[in-house]
Length: 165
Image (cartoon, rainbow, N blue to C red; front, side, top):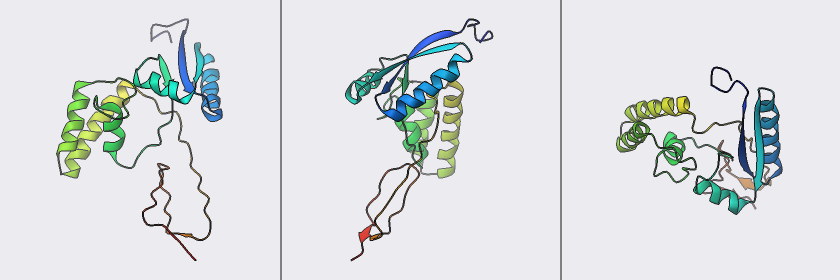
């Protein structure tokens, strides 16, 4: 804290949705931060207000969920490109934008991977977003449902499933 210019700690407010798991995680973070001299105030908002606050970038800190996707473009472009559809932070780094555009423009996977890795290195150093934990997904199915494949991102892909008679 001293090296960061805040020898006496600091205070900030985080906004989160009103849901038991989100509030519990925010409370756990609050307790851990308090141990090192950081005071985190928790503001709970219902879904529509929370979304508006995120879209308007009207917060000091925001706590929300991101399931993640297997493709780097879906994760990185959507969240860290100024034109990304899940750009909740207002993050805008010209080099990251350029690298993500180059990765999208090439058909060469090795070249695209190089651009994504460079962009991710910058994003990790700047930390406009911090992923706190992975929310495990559990799926229960009727035994008659066939060819269902669970994916780590939790999204349901129902194209190939069928119901056994």
